[in-house]
Length: 117
Image 1 (cartoon, rainbow, N blue to C red):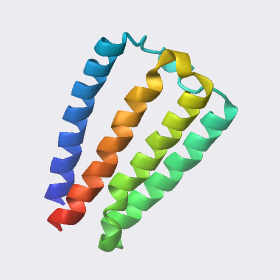
Image 2 (cartoon, rainbow, N blue to C red):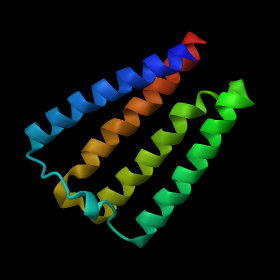
Image 3 (cartoon, helix red, strand yellow):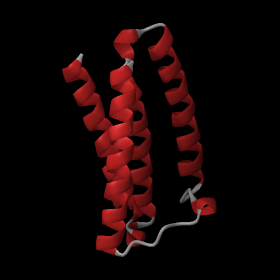
Image 4 (tube, rainbow, N blue to C red):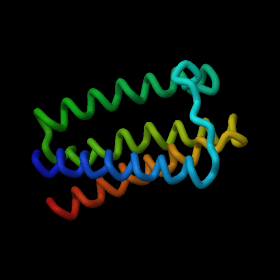
């Protein structure tokens, strides 16, 4: 359990550093929180994936400890979905690069967790 928290904190710190670096290097304009979704498919797809993630996290933490790597894979898939939707519908903004880096960090966190345990 402690290793999960440590990995999540490291992911958070690395994500903040990568976001600032990518925004500065690419001159990416940060979107308004109200314009979070590029279309309705993106909106409903993310909501469904979020609910599935919450369910998986609750089950992995309480009932099925062998599913704990999914604690990192689930959000990674959610952010990968966001990356694809932003890339297909809003390439010119470049925000998909930020989402892609976050997704990569979650998948890397899953690999690190599996190696540790």
